[in-house]
Structure formats: C-alpha cells, structure tokens
Amino acid sequence: MLAVQRKGTPILLHANITNQVARYLIEMKFIPSLEGAEVIKEEISHGGSRFDFLLRKNGRGIYLEVKSCTLFANRVAMFPDAVTERGKRHLLELAEMARNGIRSIMLFIVHYPHVQWFMPDFHTDYDFSLNMLKVRNDLMILPVAIEWKSDLSVSQNVEILEIPWDYLHHEVKDRGSYLLVLKLERQKLIEVGRLGKFMFQKGYYIYVGSAMSNLRARIKRHKQKRKNMHWHIDYLTQVTDGFLSILIRSSQRQACEVARSFSSIMKSGPYGFGSSDCKCLTHLFWSEKSPLQREAFHDVLQRFRMRHP
Image (cartoon, rainbow, N blue to C red; front, side, top):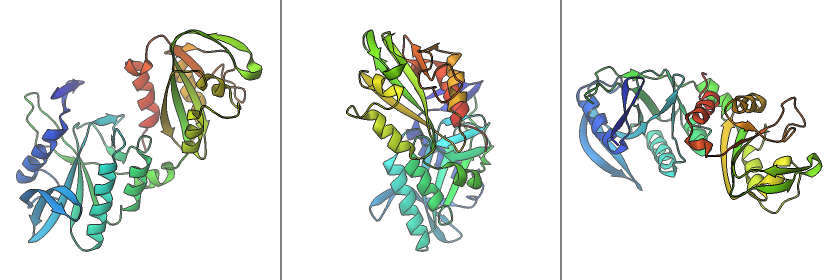
C-alpha cells in the first residue's frame, strides 16, 4: 500500500519513497532553513554509519539524515512508532559530528499538514527520546509537515513544526500509566487473592495500571511468571497465554481516567479488580476479540498519549 486517506487528505505510507520526497523538496527550495542547499551525494558514509544525503550550502557540507513520520493525532506528530536502535545511533552520531564542527541535520518529514507540534514518542521509545533531549543543543533537529495532493504530488506548502522542549523535559520520565493486554485461550476459574474466585472467559483482557516511578521496572515484574502475589493482576498474568505492555508516560496520575475510557468500549471485569485504592469499579476489561484491531481502542490510546503540550 502506497498511501491512505485521512479526512480527505492523502498520507504516504511507503517510507522508502521519503528520501525521494526529501530530495525533491530540497531541490525545489521548499524546506525552510534549507533554501539554497544542493544535493551533492546520496547514501554518504561517515564513521561507522551511512547517512541519506550530503548537501552543500554556502560552500559548506551538511550531512542530512531523513526520517519518515506517519504517527499523528490531536495536532501532534510523534516519531518513532516502534523502537529504533538505528534512529538512536544516527541521532548520537550526527550530534557528535556537529560537536566536531561538521554541519549535521536530522530532518523529520511528517506526511500530514494539520499538525502543530513534533515530539519524540517517549511512550514507545524512551531511550530515543532521552537522547533527543540530550543532543538538542548540539544537533539541528528539523521537523516539517508536508501536504500530499489527491494525485499524490507534493504541495509546496512546507511548515516547520514546533518542538515543545520544556514540556518534553517535564514529561519524558520513567513514570505514568500502562496497559497490559492479556490473552486467555480458554475459560478458566481463577482465584484472585482476597478478592475471591472468578470465572474468566476466553478472550482478551486489558488491565490499566499506574507506576509514578520506575515504570519500566514495574512492567518487567509483570512479565515474570515466578513472583510473590501482590496485586490482583499477578494472579491473571500467571495463567494468560499472551502478554503485551503499552506505556502512557505522564507526570499526571491518569490511570483512573484511562480506565473510565475503556469501560465505555469494553466489558468490565470483576468488581474491585485493581481498584482497591481508588473509586473505580474495576481496572480490568474484557473483549472477545483483540482490542488492538478496534479503532475505538486506538482512539483512547491516542487521546492519552498524544496530548497537546
């Protein structure tokens, strides 16, 4: 699939074409801050890495790495949508080159015009996000939003997006809420500590938890099969057949708000499950089919992950 439409606006999905798009935008002088630059070479090696372009502007060379961004909602664009060791390596190597006097730029092309802010996806790739904050004063980070026309040609309207650095310094911490997506292959009677015994139906469960410090350590503990039973969810993770964690990093305590959102799109689990220290009816929810395939699930996730700075 080359592209899809979102609210009538085409969105390019084919990341391999992004470099062609970047070259076109540079040659047409559409990118603010890169007017007057010319492409000298593609796929240029330096040190142990290969970068997308070597440019020349005002007689000086510029190493340029291009990243494609197709994750956006609520006027916010985020990169990456999956953990990227390669992206982190490029970020650090370009920053080191810049510190040594070699002009270097990381260009993020956002394939949607109706966005205002660009942020690293600190929910998905925490290490990339920390390193982006670390190198912000060394490396030029240039996020731009482009617009695709109905014939899949690129408009000349290219906008530089705002990076809310102060907001990121406050929010990119190892804390927040999280979802555990669990799969039960068959119906089971499970004793949940003092809460009692419950018949859990075959299907998918979402548990909404909170860890306002050491979030990654909490997820690591949940994944362990051998552990002391402490929380209600411990009894369920012992017997489920699948495990997926989804993090929602935030300085705010919002697990209850997240749980209330899921209560409107999924069936509630046992009363009091995971909610003994709050006023929620439950923090566990059930669906016969995978919630990951439902648009409503992703709407809830984006509402909490992609909030305005």
